[in-house]
Image (tube, rainbow, N blue to C red; front, side, top):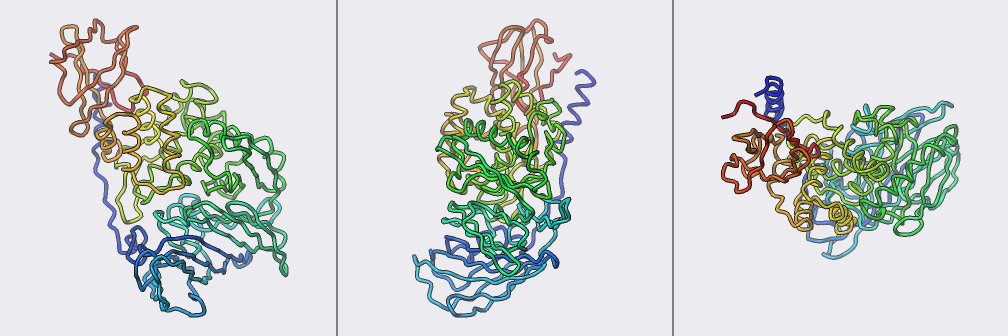
Length: 550
């Protein structure tokens, strides 16, 4: 074997099989990450959330009216709210109810009968100084900034740690409010509060204004957001697959002219992703892009933006190919989440790859649509340098845990699957079909696996087991023997059987390696000069040519 390839392979195998410290989970992790008995008996219908913001004290007070449907008998109701925020009172009707506190989970003792099938309401009052996000959006909480004019510039972001970092809710992704959420945000009168959905009314108070926002569609709890600033608004109509879509932009007043030019990428994103994924899932609630004092996040129908009006990711091309500097990463990536995260939402954080892998892949599809198929493929391949291959992509279930390599690896896994399907019309139908079949639903990995397998007509069991549940990257070993090509899979699970396209000179072939050398294959591929053999680079695998084999 060539020495440089040998050491490369050793390094690859080291990364692929390196051990990692297993996190020890606590009861709090289980209370947060599982459908406890106190969560399982009620089905969330609607939130009516009211929050008043004291910008000087950096504190909030408010209430949340939770409307739910009773699906089975129970006597305790779990509410999630994380310290240092506090629940100050809970009522059902006129009754003040007793609350048992266990860390960040709070158990309300119910007094009234809860007939199965009935619709009930519970009101939770809360107050406190919410956690400040240290590195938003990757950790959770409030960001309290000032804009260039010295005015408050405030936002929430809480994907990982959860919405309960600042407001009381059923903080588990498996249950979304069927009828959406109403948000009433009270701020000083010279500021504007922007939430999800559509602005219904603005009510003036004594030195304040209350902005009421309405989401009519189901929404994941972490996607509910609050943004406060000296905003100005502009908008446009997009002629999309379901008719006219309101595209509305909230930016700081001094960035208005800059945003009018730069935010054209939002329209380009909508065009590309409606082509690949199907119609934007929230026409009723509009599409908004909202400037915030951090990088940005995928809040449903209220995508937040803080990329500094630069192309790429803060001015850098994450793919190292040049294609990533032709568009604004945050606009494209976070808007892509409207399909994968907000339309299709995981039921357990362990399946977060569904959100991040498809959305990172949407970046390559955006490039594919606007700049051509090879450009899109080059962009995806260029992301491989950022992959660790030390942990599986699927995380531990029931504890609000997540896997690894959800972004760059996940994108390349889907790009590899596109090669196996080998029919771009069918591949597009699969991506669009996912969003139609699971429209406004929560899903599991099994749901996604089964759908793609059924629609592609392929047995993808070993493919998904390899790439989602095993950290290793398959190695395609090959050499020539008496002028013929021999090959096999190594560094993979038993039974991995993905076919791969290769070329020898001007001829193309599809081979189907197994864990055994293909000595008995009826059809031999003649290879006079091994240098003429090329493995299609669009597969996320490690090809290794073995020299000197006998």
